[in-house]
Image (cartoon, rainbow, N blue to C red; front, side, top):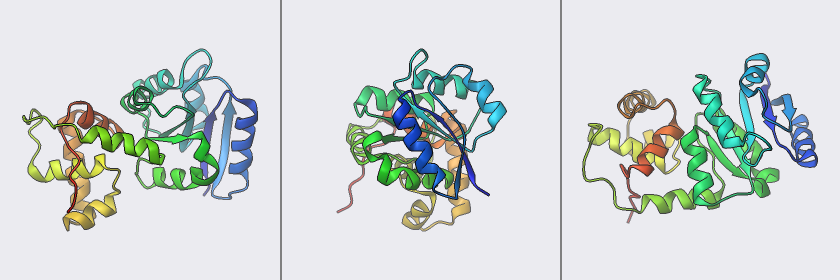
Length: 216
């Protein structure tokens, strides 16, 4: 069954181009494509997309504000931000709002389908420059306290999540089963009071709960 996509992009030509890209891939179908985010939660309830593509710089309500509204409505549909912005403020604001991934528009032609597939598998796709920015933030000194009472193993899992590692990769790195990783992640979500991987990563980075662990 094809994955349904709901697209919000104010540039008419780019919106049409993305719709055309998606239409040539039988694994995806466009549920709707709009130039504004008016009544976004109503549209989502009506069209029930599997994935939402959201431009940040939208007229009226911004993409980031829209993501907040979507998450406040208890909608957990994965949201991939598409934008020309790759600065710290936009990236972290989008992630903290509840975005599931962040793809620069200049990479759409070569990375869109990979990003959509990664979202479907529970990952958090990011353009290379955005990923480097996240890793750079992880170089900052981590918090010396453990206010959320994470276990050592949960901290390892959270650190790996913050590097963008998939569940399978984390399981392989830590020599644990996928079910065990999922159990740890569920516990992490509960302790951090978050509902998604991107929220957990954003909280971990903003509160310096993790740091980049380089391998020798």
